[in-house]
Length: 320
Image (cartoon, rainbow, N blue to C red; front, top):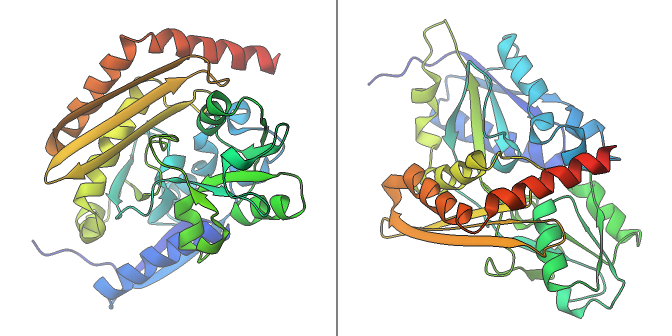
């Protein structure tokens, strides 16, 4: 099928160094595919970038990183937006869709420290920084002697806080460090068995809005879609959707695919790591949504709903 190629495309992107790297990566891929098309980047600051003194769960969640980009698309100032998939809400507004998921980078969490080689090496009372309730829960469960404090800001801001001595160590997504050419900052990669990744971690997604000019953006972006990654994150995001997809809940979901078979693991926990439900399933990768439902059912059998409700109640109490 012949694709109607526009003369110009504009990519909406946050202005952090990592977000711009991701937008530039997509721009370069599109420029190679469609050399007759001028591809530009519209840099924007989102509410998620502006509010740094509170955790995401307290100020509106993942949607804070995408709302302004969606407005730019709705107003015709941009044609597509590039996101870290784990920042994208499970439910998109009417008129918007995820058109492509690019091949995944390393999905693991990274231990970053200037003085210690691993979480196990940290002394009692050492301060660990993380922006994620999921990471907080996993650390609290295994290392109750550590002090976990919130860590917000873009990747460079977080590294700066570590280098100033505000934290003994911080936990970041390995993908961002690798994409920005900073693998040397990683002291240790956390095994998914110990730190199950968030749904969509390490994957980039392209969001689009409905158009009336006859340009089929789904077809235009299809060459960028990585089928295996797309299947894996479909299953992961299904689990998040079933349990609300909220930043107020420590939830992990990670799928791997080998020879067409998916292995999906998921976990729901309380922030202190004292109550945990975990489950896993295997099945055809083409049944991604159904596998997400199956692992969600297994989590429900382990009181995941009660854990979820206690997390939300605790979050509501903390806001009073």
